[in-house]
Length: 367
Ligand code: CP
Picture (cartoon, rainbow, N blue to C red):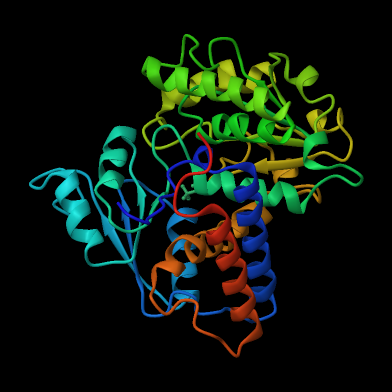
């Protein structure tokens, strides 16, 4: 697909390029906070195709597109959706048609291979808004949030992030972070009840999905010198944590009474809940959660709202992340993108993007 770079997985991008993306995101965030939002995607269009519920991903893509001067279309797919996609038109044909009319496509679509089929047929940048195995725009956002909130005197290589909860394939953020942070030398500790680990008795996912994560973790540690450790006891797992991260107990499809009973029995009653007591074991720790969260289930009100909670900063950063990501991958494809600008913030953003495109080209920089 020519000079088009998709954002399917953070894995596809080198450490250096991810760090530059984070810098661009932070630069545009600073400008936006000061009331300056360069129209880097003026008159462009973004299609947003979703087959599941979303608050943060949907709102952040749409608002970021509008702030950049683009128009965003929200389209629903799947059984109840308005698009023909997957029902009376092949995935590839819909991708070909939609991408001939817009300048970028963001998609939340659970089946990973269907999403890949869609992206393969896209002639414009494609953004994975979460599939069954990955949530890269959330992971890039988390990366930025961690960089912005490093403990005093520590660099990224020095930090420890402890994830509490299920860490099977479906827990995309835990798995994405375990493949990303060790590439920068950091430590990720995964603390799950017995059987709720990658490939465990309760991880009913296909073997290739499990293997991809296992191999990714291994490669990430080998490349960056970081560590991924599994420590079952949550109290032991948080001992040296700089960040305690947790995720949704319930997501779409697992919200029945019996699901809640299982969560109560296997998680909460066994200490897999982020509580004030857990935080007392690691002073100055910050809490993270990609949200939505069930208050009183995976986290208590206190740990969601206390001064060390990064939850709301993390959620807001979804907007800043989409803005930078779309500017980087969609902007340079417009013929007049690099035209001179009298506005300082716009000129600065274009210069940063030009440097990045020259450095990294249009191919993927990490294998
Ligand atoms: N974290 C996240 O992706 O939130 P939404 O499901 O609301 O988009």
